[in-house]
Length: 365
Image (tube, rainbow, N blue to C red; front, side, top):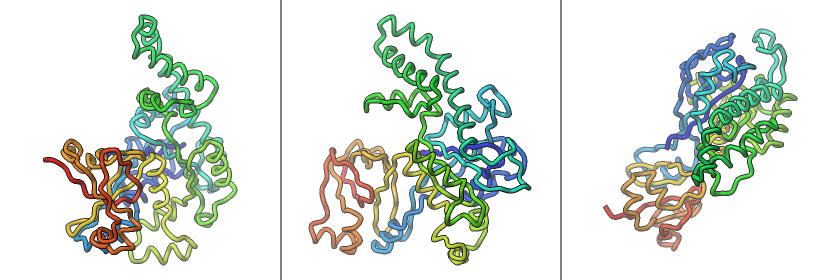
């Protein structure tokens, strides 16, 4: 399943440095000038999950295959991007193609790295980018709504519904509020998402701090966390410089380096997990001698949908799912122990998959 998080922000906030560390490549050129990232760079990364290693050890799996999430490094936006300033139109188009927005904010002071607006104000930076996205969304809707309104007045049911949703979004945007603030019924959520609005996408704020504040945060990151809390958004504190150093170290030296900085794990692990959660995703597992594998589904997915992630034929011919909760699988020593203890369940088509389920699907070929 191709879930994408777009990394956005003003120039020189650490986006490309973070992306380089995230993918452990130098694919995104990190340089001290605006627009060094001309094309979006794409990195496909594993979602860290200690449960998978535990399952593999118990099942004596020959191979471990984690679930993955894609990050897209999108070049820096500037004030006026919605009107084509900088490389605005291209960047805005790239943002429309992602499922969620990871917004990197500069929360460090450094006279050697210029700020495009000449000051350190992460909340102001976030508002600048959000404003450009809202203006672009509003322009897009106002351009599209007239023909939809004509069809709606002509009695077309689908157009009536679309017109109502577009009107709801326009009202919010004209008030200076992002489209994600819309009050929607469950039935309206998918057609609303299909309007393709950038400010409808969920947001995760990344407070990029100096090395000394990586473990505790600083006064700037606290402001970011307060903003995220007010908005119901996510927030993660990271030092992109530290993450870049960690990515360049041999694997066996990373733990000691992080420990010396009072860090338990790379900040990128938290970022990846937060991005995964931001998209409303959960993990289920398959485990056996051949491989232990993590799979991604959205929260609320039913067993046949989970089967379909593995192979479309599994969903079409779904009969039932042999299901063991992760804790039961581990505490009882694997599939055989769980079965003997009566902890293996046979679940049907209406079963809602729980995070951590270890599953085996029965299906008609």
